[in-house]
Length: 485
Image 1 (cartoon, rainbow, N blue to C red):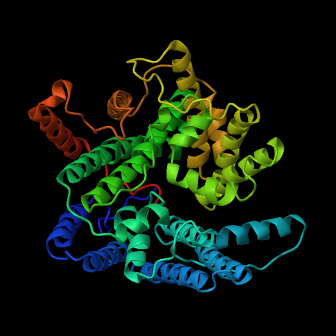
Image 2 (image 1 turned 180 degrees about the horizontal axis):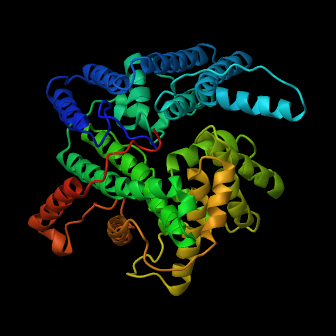
């Protein structure tokens, strides 16, 4: 992973620390009318996104305009189902074509050439050296959900172009989610918003917790995980296992930390975004893990691919086929590499037995609800599920299938339990994260403190915030780019 430069408006950068307060003050104290607020959101979001590369703005503008226009055309031809199908299909194809060209063109080309070479046919294929726009998968899926929902009559198409542009480009969740639905976020741009102190304070708490997860947990884990994965042949099985564990918490602290910051920042402006993570490493089986991990994506695939394929209403084996498709597509969505597809297939193999025997929705409540500690059975379930997830992350993190297999093979050779050779500080931060989130597992996020017990005192709450803030600054690891960028 390359080190991120300071030129980008990362949530954990000094630039964003200046950007967010300025946008906040102008939003509430200067651009007070609804229309002006929405227009300002668009302008601020385009500045935020264009900071990476101004050329990215062309693509997001095309995606936004085409989706907005498709909604108006669908409304104009109401009752003419054939025309509506063509309009909706055209918009979907156009957006997916843009996504595929930028994200998957070279992958398909290289694999097609390799396939023909196996049969002795030399195929000339021109690869293109293009920069993958940040967040293109996220805002493309968000735009597609709008046009599909309009076609399905789940939402009325909006005529407010400014509000729609703001909905697609809203900067807190633009580049790494949550992937919002038009039915939730778009109506919030169409009604006047008033400042709520309690909501803003809650948003700041979630931002602080997200920064701790990213800067302290994820970035410190990244240093160790990168070193071990880059030189995995030099380590014994035990340290390879710990390298995988560190990556497991790197990707969780990184991605869920981003989501916390995004949700908290949106709350500062009066918006409610959907929850994206629900303490996934406290899951008792893989099915529960996927209900708690990247919720906005898994529910998107469920509503727009799984259910249209027939969902679970078409017989057990066809439903199993649909489930397999979802996991493979989910893996491919993460990147143009066979490792991601294999990662999706690995999780499908873990999920399908539960689905076939009807146990995939066995655990829908919080583990050990109302208790301090889990039962012995629950503890074994948590540990087993966690180890399976760790195994999957090795496949996800590897550069190639061969490297993933080699890493897994080496991990079981010369395995002698003990203290990890590297990353002792990162391990302490992981333990702190786990303890806090275990105690807060019935809340929305780790720092959602209720005014009871010792926290009924204002000094205790604010003291906790200040300690966490100072600790985040002092203990932060080397600044790393967000993985899902």
